[in-house]
Image (cartoon, rainbow, N blue to C red; front, top):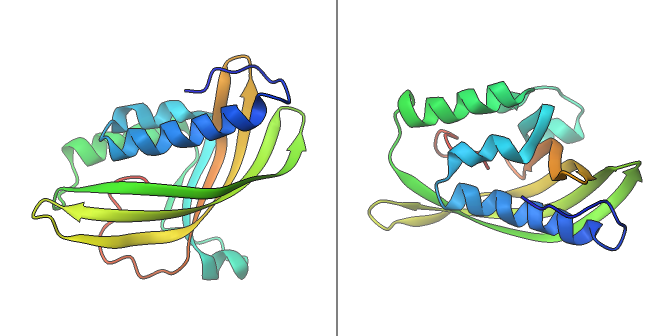
Length: 162
């Protein structure tokens, strides 16, 4: 986790480190670390661009606490049945769009490729992250992460967080 204090010179670095650490934890199959990137309470949502633009509340995934995030990890590890695969995230165009006290609204783009055990690779999802990030002496954490998928055609179960 980013452990920089809230000093305006360090905020962009803390945000970038949080985002990099987040995707590396997922890509390196360290899913048990995933909930630690969030405050409690928190919001983690995966939605389609169409629903977001139309103001429709339906989401593909909705978690509103770290306990729900932990439950997703336990489900992935012990309950869900899916073909083993790995993600590789590319995050770009990180932009702070607003600040209120120690909370920063941050927009960025993502592309996630998926590699199956047999080596088959495909673009799994593209879209945008819409984040609220809290930066303080304890580091940077997501208070809200909304994953806005460019389309709703997810060709497989979303087992692993995006």
